[in-house]
Image 1 (cartoon, one colour):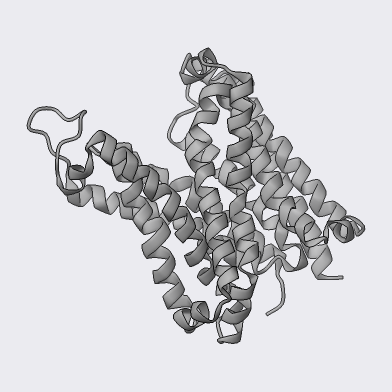
Image 2 (cartoon, one colour; image 1 turned 30 degrees about the vertical axis):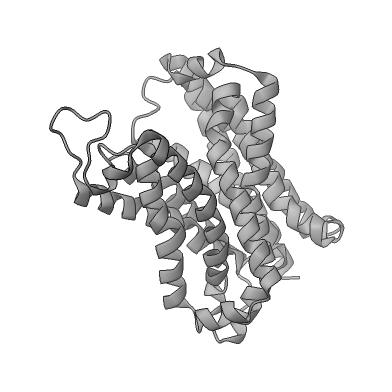
Length: 357
């Protein structure tokens, strides 16, 4: 089956919706500390779901991974671990720069590093920029960055309208520290795309084993997400030891519990499983989308980021998080959404132009 960028964009949108939705079940978990529900969900996100779906959708998974050069496995794991640091430091970016500037810097860098890094590293960026389809795709990436900045400014304006957390974040404003952390978070978060790019030998072996091209990236996720699991598990283990919260996995009371109150273990574990599987779903569909983007597969990361921000914002409207925001703020966020939708159209058009060349 040849490249089909239109189908690829659709898969990226489904993945973006899955990513934007994963925290909805997490918000319903009760009487578990953050480190407990984050690790519980992560077991499904980074361990169970990747291996389960790769085992079902691909041929000879263990044979493929055992035949993969050790260097390839190491780099996939390494970039996954580096990505884990980016996610863990993202919250500090908001604390020291505020929502608007923090999101613009961190997500902007993540988009640029994750998208442009592989073609720069491979030495193909010049050839891409020399073609009409390449210029169109690169224009779409620029539009995505503009959309991220506009949505971030709208989020900051919303918090100002509602007198919420933005003012607290700005109260701790520290430009130097915030920019350093935002740069670190943005660069590290973009490493996931590098991990996927490093997994090309795994894709080749997967295809040679007879796997459908749509599922060729699933074994790569097993290795990259193992790196992410390592980073997140170590941090959560530290917090669990410091906060003495390990017993919550088995029904112990959390600090915010009322006397005699205990968590509903079955409900919490089911919600963690649902949220974790939804989180994994973003990359399940990401790898499918990437397989359809042809020579411009590098643009998949931009589509991924744009769709996550787009659907996260729409979830915010559905959950009435924008209730009470001023008309000007609402106009600003819809402008950002329009830019993000437009960017996916432009990138898709560039990829389709290249595929038909």
